[in-house]
Image (cartoon, rainbow, N blue to C red):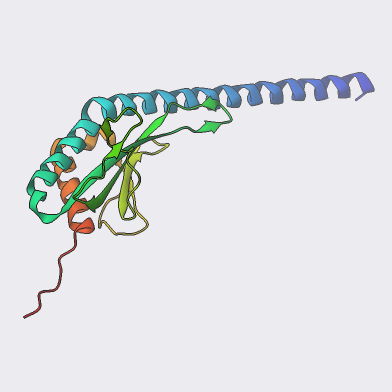
Length: 179
């Protein structure tokens, strides 16, 4: 094989490798776009169905616990993730915690009473959308048994009520009765 044939064969190999690499990069970009589309659909479901259902279940828990000098609070956050493919949509997250029932009102400069912005309670549970568009539950202080990430579409209203009940059980543990 002379020098021309050797160089032509090497060039053909490089062209083939470049095509394979371009196809792989296009496949990765397509997969990334599909993941972002899935995340956007999950965010839409979160905003329209999941977050209001959690709010309603927490409001109901607060009605029942009204005489117990505690209440559940919800702090809403959004997580922004910037990766190699650009910024993902903001992933919503709710932080549910227990605080004393009384509220501290502040007096503003104009003499009006106002509630301070909610702070994150010491004991709390975070529920939100993970990068894989599944509902995730996390807490460093308490344990909620059996809560694995679940597809947003499979997180029914009944599951949400059960989930909030689990949070109430974890945040408001039973006291040992002394006789």
